[in-house]
Image (tube, rainbow, N blue to C red; front, side, top):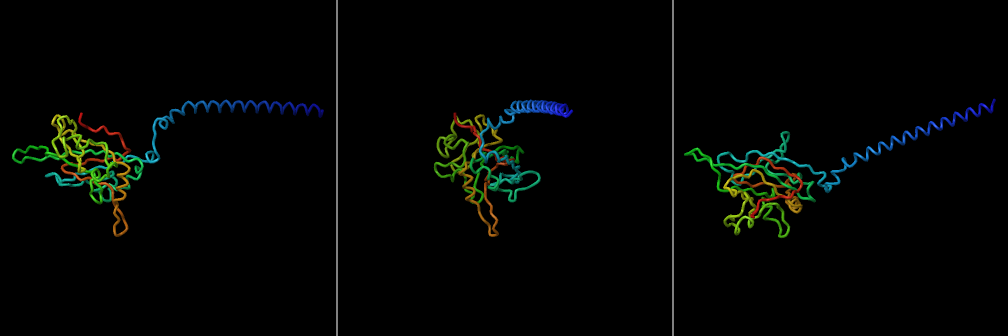
Length: 263
């Protein structure tokens, strides 16, 4: 009797072990199925990482758009005025006339792009009530504290502003007449001002511009920061304008700018 009971127990244990092996096999198959599924979807989720090369600073940086408000009284172009900005509808920049260098911290190693959208002011002939454009329009990116023109203050061999046609690309000589084959509608003058002009067809057609600030320019902005008597500090970038109403400014990663230039 004991022998039969022992055999019965052994048989039940063997059956239990066989069932357990079957469960392991089933679990293994499920794991293999899951792995296969993950292998199938992995390229989709990892594709951006494989096709996009970014630095740590680039991956953390997000574009910041500043909305501009009219910087003139609407009767005459603001002589060397500065546009006012708000970050969004919920908050104004503490000093709305300049961009704090704090907004550029994520771009210290890479530099950044600056995209401006704008409109040209016009003058009105009171005798005919007809509007017309001014002879020229100017805008200069400057250091906020010193008002030094970024392009003009860059040390030789280390540009601060890039991606725009320069004066000698557009003119026969510095300050000279525009070249006949210059097809652009703006260029960077040697004194640091961006000069807006009529295009090849005689139209004032430009409404946006993009250029890059180099890492060295951002470092120079940080060196230009001023500390107040109460211990607070301020500094960054300001735009000096003549006849230009800046509608928005977007700070983003540096881009390859295809600037209009002489052919």
